[in-house]
Amino acid sequence: MTQARHIRIVELPLTQLQPYPGNAKRGDVDVILDSLRRNGQYRSLVIRETATRKAPFTILTGNHTADAFRLHGKGDCGQLVTAGTETRPCGICGNDPKWKLTARCEVIDCDDDTAKRINLVDNKSADAGSYDDDALTALLSGLDGLDGTAYTDDDLDELLKSTGALGEQSAAFLSSFTDPEPAPAAGPPSLNPFSGADVPAGPPQTGPTSTLTQTAAEPDQSTAPPVTPGPVPHSPGVHTGPAAYDGPGARAHPGEGIEIPPPVQMVPLQWVFTLPQRDTVRAAIKAEQAANGHETAALALTAICAAYLGPTTPSEDQ
Image (tube, rainbow, N blue to C red; front, side, top):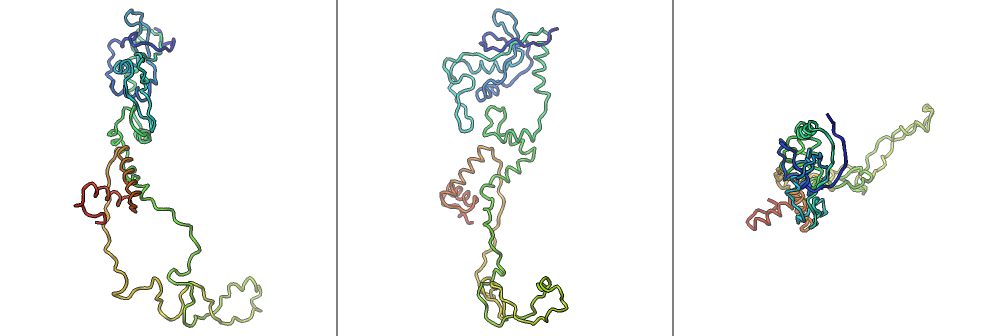
């Protein structure tokens, strides 16, 4: 019995390759074709020389990849792929009209029994594994699109729900609109925010001067002179005097002052978006805010909806 031994890597026409006889796996050729167009051929077909005249090589692993190449066909397919903001040619033909049906292959040498085992384990090992859903969600969410991954937007939505990441995605959807502005640098604190710096009318309050500051200057307290009561120095910004304070912030008399409107009822609004849909909604809200100066994302979104529905819709303040 001969174990697999690497011989060489070579680019071969598909006409020289035959599928593994009795291959039991039924793969999704369309998904593989999409991956090849977006990512290119990242793994060689593993083939074994069989010395037959019609097709001298047999494919042990990669039978469905060869089928995807055949489905693509020779020459320029006329399709481009998007990678972020970049547009690239097809990863199979490179949009070359002269491209021929070829694939990169790794030629190995082994006996018939080992060839059969290689075909079986390659098919089964992919089915035997499992996934860390949190890690998978993080990988998919970090992409600018799902082309060439075999995953769909629905797959990602289901992962977001099952892992609990959907709530985080929803909460973060409007974060760029709702995050508070950085607070300005704080100045020196005011002694009384409701008073000015003017000295109020009326006699100042009097009282004893504190003796706490005398301790360090007069170690021998037995010889210290008696403390004479005197006026308390006035601190700017502190209201003093017998009269009731009636400056800014003073309590209004009944029937006076500005009427406070009733509170507006606020309700949460939440949808489940695919990543491209989320980016579209964000862009629309930001454009509306920039064009018409709405203070919040809610006002901008309401204005967009009102413009779509026409003049019969309630105003954005309702």
